[in-house]
Length: 633
Image (cartoon, rainbow, N blue to C red; front, side, top):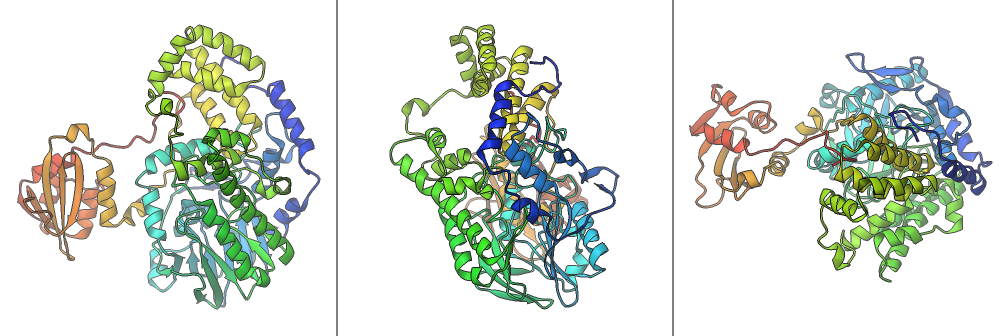
């Protein structure tokens, strides 16, 4: 074990376990390799994508090392998946449908119409989306974008929209289609818990990790997240029901709504004139997340599996190719049905077997250790847990039905992490004794136990250099052995921050466009989340806004709760200050762009009462920390 910030080689136990993977799965099956490279037309000449300041936001050549043989420091199954995901360029799916893959975490799909093109899911940031569109046009000509479609409400499927269209294009008649509820979920997810999710996403995708055989090699669903400008243009056409049809630029589409599957608002699309089916992110070449490690609402595998059955029933007889917003397509009607059916069985099996075992009294961790997939599913490469995992998905199902508490009263009121750690370390004979015995476990290859037990020393004594080094070394070995890309990234990010300090949040999703898309209700909800409770117990402040475009809104801070009401508010809640202003000025105030002092200087703003009370109210709001500690207290 090294005692510095340098990475270590794989320990013998990890190297042997990775070697065994080569004999467990059918690595001689090259169909995915053939499919991933089918229809390749070319890639960009410039390997880096930069922002306006010249900062690199994506590097196409960063994963060139994956062409080498898998080293001992990586699980061969994950290495195979990452190699497939790192293939970049423009690919023909079928005549008239193209995908740009490997330019971001997700794919951008382009469907050719009568006059121009429909762009589906324009990546995470404007810079990578613009580069993807330029690549397409370099091969297929300068066709205008005549429509944009978001398949669902996650940022890697809308964030690059301003790289392909502008507000002027949309105002001029370019429609933006999305499933019902898209905007509400797209903006709320990135604001309400956005700070915590963004910080944890730094671990999940490992965007700040060095790329290489001892570092970040992918995230299973794609390689990692780009770090450019996240944008958003609100939809203009809402898809509200399964069976709804829309024709844009001569492109006929039949929609299937799938809410509550991979995203709260999501849809699949059948293109009858192309015999092609877009599965959004509901069927990809891995086991997906039922609860992402960055955090989200727990998804419903029962509903997910039923929508996959419905997709087969509705579209399979008329489909020759199925593609998604990640990974590579599947060609041939029989293979499409098999692929979708196995994906369906995967989620249904996890759901049903988790429920069976929890009704026998097993807890989430116990179920996760016992869960095994049927051999037929385990043999299929696309069911492997490269992004989601059997382990954390079964725990998510347990959480969905029974919550965090496992029913054991000893776990009902445990001490929080630091206090528990201090007591554990004292009980175990002090930090030196814990580390002595943990080093023995490390030598035995029990890295799970080392990570668990040494974590107590790190939390009890954060400045204990020996503990941090041993914890980092153990996490690193766990990463080397992980088949799951996000687990590997979490382990290696933990090791990296223990050795080098925090990296913060590389990809910020609560961008100006996302914030601008919040409704006033959502903006006020976002403020309520920031109220510093204990500091606000005695405050009682009421502010009334009269919006010139119409409507009155009353905001009251009382009992450390910020409530809002349309109109004059509850009886007896006479305002301390009333402000008549435009909706734009109100938004600027709530977003912190202007201050109450700025407002009183504007001729078109009318203030009655004490404007200082508004300043007092805003002073009770805290500021989220995008750099909070994860692997240390």
